[in-house]
Image 1: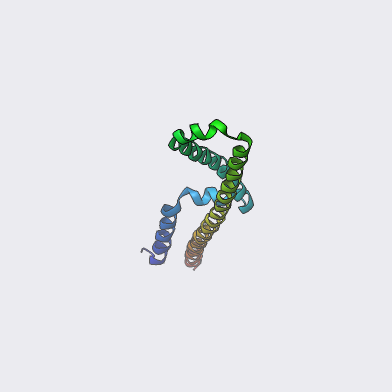
Image 2 (image 1 turned 90 degrees about the vertical axis):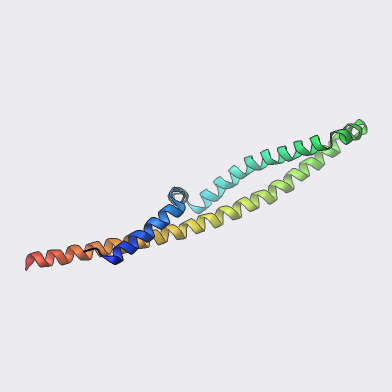
Length: 139
């Protein structure tokens, strides 16, 4: 006879597995601090690429104005302004990356804990069945 409780537990576990899949195992294998640091480092490189792309697009868009503007320009002042823009952009971007990583880690940790509760509950159900069958055999 099919145990409806077990079927429900297995269905819940399957839904959790299909929802997040390997990401839960992958993310929860790290400590939270390690995962956040890894995401910040990845965010640093991606943020630098994004800033360079934005800067390139701005230069392409304003090319005609920039030719006349740079004719009598103070390059060190512009370099400082670009550097300050980069620092502000990266600071905001890395804070967002860290907050997103913390949120993702906590969410996946909760899903992992829920999955483990279902798995333990299912294991206890099977163990209870084994005990009942052993008792019947002994009688």
